[in-house]
Every structure is written in C-alpha cells, then in structure tokens.
Amino acid sequence: MSAEDLLILTDADIKMFLEHAPLYSWRHFKRPSVNRSSLHINEIDSYCDVCGQIRPFHDLQPRGGGAGMAIAALKTGTSYFSFTCVSCKKSKRTYLVEQVLDDETIKIQKYGELPRGNIPRDKILQKFLKDDRDNYEKAVICLSHEYGIAAFAYFRRVVENNISRMLDLIQEDAQASGEASETLKAIQSLRDDSPMSDKIRVANLALPSHLQPDGLNPLGRLYQVLSEGVHSLSEAECLKKARATSECLAFLVSELASRKEHRARFKSMVGGL
Image (tube, rainbow, N blue to C red; front, side, top):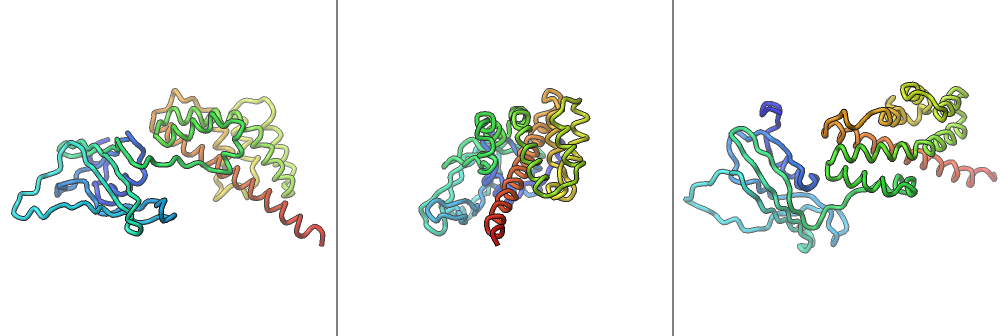
C-alpha cells in the first residue's frame, strides 16, 4: 500500500489503536506534515474493574517543561504508555508500542499490554456451539489476534459442523411463523446432496425475510463460506471473511433464540386466557 492510500496519523487513531488493536498486529499510517515529538496522548477509554463500567483513563505521568530546549522529532523505536482511571485512581492500563518510521509513513504495533485484553465471545453463540467448543475457541482466538487464514479456516469448520443444526432452528422458526411452503421446501432441499452452487442459490430462498436485515441473507453467506477454499485467499481477505462469518453466525443464532424465547413466553402468558 502506497503512502497516498494511507490516513494521516492522529491522536484519535492512536487512541483507537491502544483501545482495540491486538498484540503484534501492525497498523500503517501516513506521517503528518508537522512531525510529532512522540506518540503520547492524554486519554483513552477502558472498562474499569474497580468502578465496574467504562471510564476515561488519563496519562498522569509528569512530562517536564523542557523550556528552551529543542523538541526532538519522533523516530523509530519504542514508546511506553501508562493510563490511570480518573474516577478511582486505582485501575491502570499499560502499553508497550513499537514504531517504525520512514520519510512518508509510520507503522505501529503493540508488543505489550497490561492487563491483558479480554477476548470477546458471543454468549448465545457459545451456548449453541457447546458441542463444537474447541473449534469455536480456536476461531475466536485466531480472529482476536488477526490471524486471518487460521480464523477463516476454523470458522469454516464451525459452519460445516453446525449447518444442519442451524437449519433445524430456521425450519422451526419458519413453521412457527407460518412461512410459505416454498420456504420450507427450500430449507429441506438444503439437507439433500447437491452441488454447492445450487445450495448457495437455494439458501438465498430458504431464509424468512424477517431474518434478512435490509435484504442481507446471512444463511446464503454461510453457504458461500463453505464453497470457498482458504488457499486462494490472502491473509487480509481471510480476516475479512472470518469476521463476516462470525457476525452471520451470531446474528442468526441470537435472532432465532430470541424469537423462540418470545414465542414460548407469549404462549405461557396468553395461551391460557
């Protein structure tokens, strides 16, 4: 990627990087026209274990005045960040960052972080995949570290292992919602042996419209995942597809589980009237 395609590094970019980037993952930027003296910023936002909520964390380290001294320009090396919760003054966040500069660009990566960042997991999806927990855990961990090829390979395996159970949930929801017979036939045909190209086409017909936000069909996307080979994709492409697969799985499972719960509650409350 050329320097012209990169965004100019700002304090907001550094804040986002410290808050969300995984360890050992490079972020590339264009150098600002006026060179920075350091990467230091004054504030990040993070979950405070003491306060029990998201709080601002400030850099409280003394910097010194440096009056009358020339300001050194930022150069290739390392930077240390320390932030303290402004409310309790007890919880801290510490980061070690490596920066590499050339005439036009700067790239940064975290190589240390305390406390270690938590890896987010979708609780409903985690419950649905309890019998395939090993593959799901590997997929989530690889995704959190931006190992695109590995993450996509594991998510592809998760889809392959659980697509039949997913169809069971979709069929149950379609029957309870009084969907047209064409939808139920399409769901059934996905269980039959047929070329994957046919399954992708049918999957776009088998999902009820209320499970297609703005016309986007997550079931069709999952069948498309099963048709793609990892070896033909770049690391970045695999990472993008792994994230999309994770979102499709989480959306379908959470929506179907929520609708099932609401139906059961409605029947129990109103059915006896």
